[in-house]
Length: 330
Picture 1 (tube, one colour):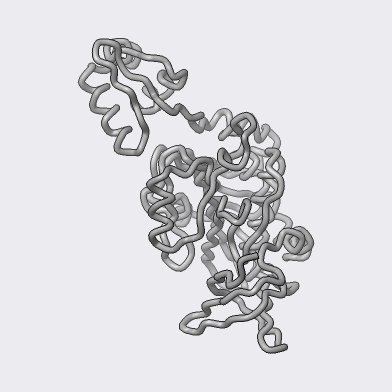
Picture 2 (cartoon, rainbow, N blue to C red):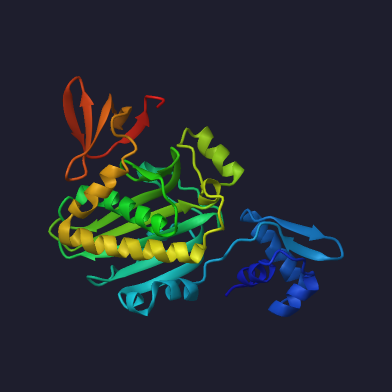
């Protein structure tokens, strides 16, 4: 546990702690405490510094803890996981896994981070990952050979995220082709799939997932300025008790691991019904950008292999990959 983690663990109760008290408990100088508080502020965390009294963390969060995540998963499940790495900060959890050897067949490797400095979205976009404001994790899985309906892998991952959120008590969510989980028409979670290997196998898939818990105002403003889909956090759609970040991380890991196993066995067929039932775009007027081409029409759901179906002038076109924009205001 690094010094910043120790400081946050002590300040997690929201009470005032003097610099001397923090320094003595951690075993560093008061100057070091002041320095690390400054670095934590640079990560976007807010502290109240009261002269003569000390520091207070204004909006404490539940920090991720590897032992708690593994306890939630259970010993039997953890026996099927090659490794779970929990990082303080990372450029990208997916990049961390892509730099490692793939896990053995039937096992997964997981990486989580409290903050990403270079989180990636689709088509080179950024996934903004403020410290502690979400769950940022990636899971790698090795298929002996390319599974059926490989183009639908991100859709299966979306269903897995939906299952995990449902297990946490969050309902009324929808899926937007090809890789978003929405709540009330706003983006709650995003998925990015990286593939490495050959079509005949072996093939490694790294599934990156970002789930918003809170969306800081500066982040929301930046996304709006860039024309991105309005974001929302779990804390904004659910007024009930705060969800445990460690339990949510465990639910996501479990759901993604099981989904990859299922996808390797049966392809997309085991996910298609759930996806269709939560299809946000179906029967809505949209435009789809495919490379330099923009197609307009009515969304007609997904095909059995996960390809998007767009009706234009009475003809249904299948689209493998593209960016969708709503044209209606339903």
